[in-house]
Length: 348
Image (cartoon, rainbow, N blue to C red; front, side):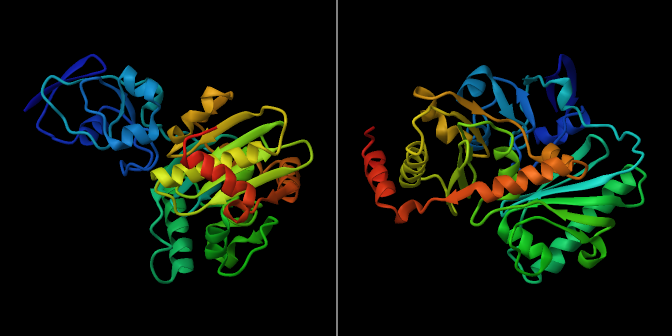
């Protein structure tokens, strides 16, 4: 039996996993404690720093004692604090609802909303790895949506808004998709709603989620998605230059390639942009803060995706944003290769 202190309260427990203890005391684990969302933040300098901590938290936050709870064990005398804003949300009454799905090859997030987001659940995406991916994905979204309906006493959704990359959009539809954004009958996809709105996306890894971030920032701005699939987008007055890299593990060589990609994008403007970074590997881009104004975004695209259901102007803006995108050749470019050589040698 261990004695712990949680938000100033003395507790005794024979549980060994911190997650199991803190759930009982109100800490919310949006992804179910699977280590893929980075939201179960607690403060305790007594806890050792793990790989998950360094992936999701900045070095300053780690130094201040912030940790993730999902991969930690309990210990005698441990003192833990977390903010009230992280307490598990209580289901509120909804007059109507929509379902918001944001997904890529790494994760699937499913939320329920009326005028505001009521709840979002995050899951690791292992659906596209097996057979019958289209059927399985539709069934998964339907099942999770129905669970949310039951929790919030709703029968079905007015609209399911789907923000996806090309691969996931085509998996859901079961056919090719040009990414220009479509309103579909929900029964065609066997989803519990009146309609399905597929948000626009571009080729490669320029997903609908990424467009939701691009459309929010004024020129000049550089938006970076730091995940297994990297995407960078330089927002200018007329054009948006984008570049992507696939299947990254953020090894030393890949970090040099990422640095080259960022330098390649920055070479397209003479005006220093504000740089916005989000994703699981955001800390890999801390080197940019030496010369640029960098903001690590601890936010999601759920709100923007949900807003598209009601806002035709935003739908139009996303589509215009998609049309402005010019995809850069990346490693096929001589200029990118020059930046890569310099980055690999740690020279400016």
